[in-house]
Image (tube, rainbow, N blue to C red; front, side, top):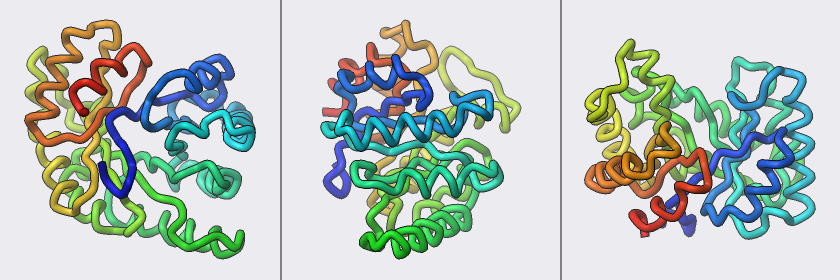
Amino acid sequence: MTNNYLFRSLLFVPGHNERLLESATRSGADVLLLDLEDSVQPLENKPVARQKIRQYVENGRFVDFHVFPRINDRESGQLLRDITELTIPGVDGFMYPKSTKGEDIYFIDKLLETIEYEKKQEIGTFKLIPLIETTGAVLNAQDICSASKRVIAIAFGCEDFISDLKGIHDTEGLSLYNPRAIIAMAARNHKIAPIDTVHIKVHDLEDLEENLKIARILGYEGMLVLHPKELELVHRYFS
């Protein structure tokens, strides 16, 4: 546990999907990553997702969870609207995607500080979980971890990383060992929680268990999760 947050499981939930939002209320995950980014397409669904997430939070549907919406990055044209509309009670903070360097996190920190000031909220209320998705970001993991006191965890996103690396997924996951180790070491060095990448083959629980064994060996504290069926096994390994 880091800063009183339990980070065994962080479940992605598309913010515009009413059925999956409702299912998330019964999931038992530690953290809900209410997605405004990759899973919310086309662009016209972004405002719908913001409205639905806000409605569920304000109605107390996620009161038993830590809530970290995954916002859009600073190049998207959506970031300010995401943060302005969702810096509300019931939201613990935000997952910031495509974090490439410490400057990205410093920028979000100052943006949040301005919004907190304008809303008369305590400065530092909203925490950050940077998502590491590129080769450059892995190499800058130390700077990303130290860029803001709001950063309480750092997570690895393997799919975009593999694409950026121009590598391939292999059965042993060899292409992911080094970045997973680097991210975990950077996080532990800065006393924040390292969160392992999603397990893509959501219906293969045997393969999930093998990945969980490696994650524990590498020092991870939790895992990004795509499907609730993974939660029981994930919680067993990180409890």
